[in-house]
Length: 190
Image (cartoon, rainbow, N blue to C red):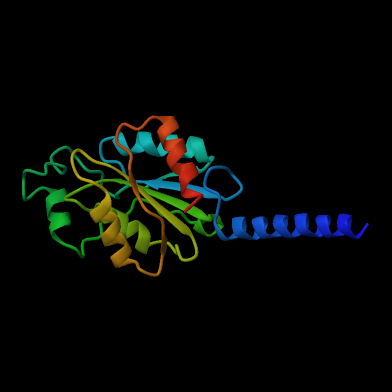
């Protein structure tokens, strides 16, 4: 009888330990944690990836949109006078948001997506971060790019907002749903 009680106690201890460990790390691969997928997309590429992440996680989509939409001329990175070039040349630039997410407190995990501009996150991402209370949330950056990696942009976000809980970011160019699912599953093991 004592052996049975000891076995049951051991099993319960293991279960409680596992539950406590899961509580420390929000599960981003299902709806046990409330997930927000916030993204800025100038051409639609990042929006497509954001929709895939939302589908996989069961998260809610939120489009980070500027008050004044970017035109094709605004996005001309070859023109040093274009809106995007001027914003990226000024580290203090904060494009005005069309809207903020008013009920952000209910989310545990926030994916933040963006295209890479000048090896950084566009300045509107800074506007989004500074316009919302993200303390205590798990922040997961993801990006699309024509040629840059995500490393520098994530490094700069971590440096600019060191009090926030950042996970490693991922460049998701051309990744199919299975590859995105694997990445999200691996986030739970970090």
